[in-house]
Length: 141
Image (cartoon, rainbow, N blue to C red; front, side, top):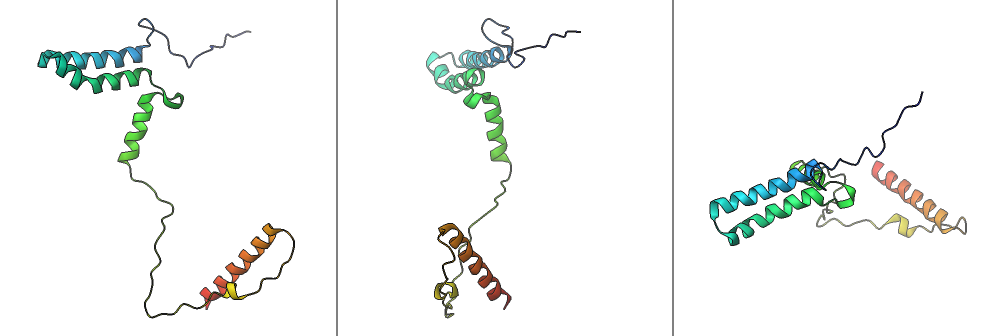
């Protein structure tokens, strides 16, 4: 048996001329809001002034796709970003300086670390291991 597999399922059908139903609803909504503003104000200047944000929003909802995503999804993501609390994984805390307490000299700086190999990367890893062990020993004491 042969079955026909539908193709281009992510492309919406053009219902109203060159517009899809969603695009038509967004454009018609913006035009309707501008008409309502003109109906109440009876001034073309104030209608254009107050209706410009609605026209821009309706046209961007209908046609603008940043990074291939519909603009309505971008607005939804921005809304939830500003509404929800944020989780900060790392926050740098300033070190507290105690007055009158002298700091001990750094033991790692005083030690002569012997060179084990010619590779700088392995030397760096070895010196970090020594520093970690010294800090663990100092914390345990």
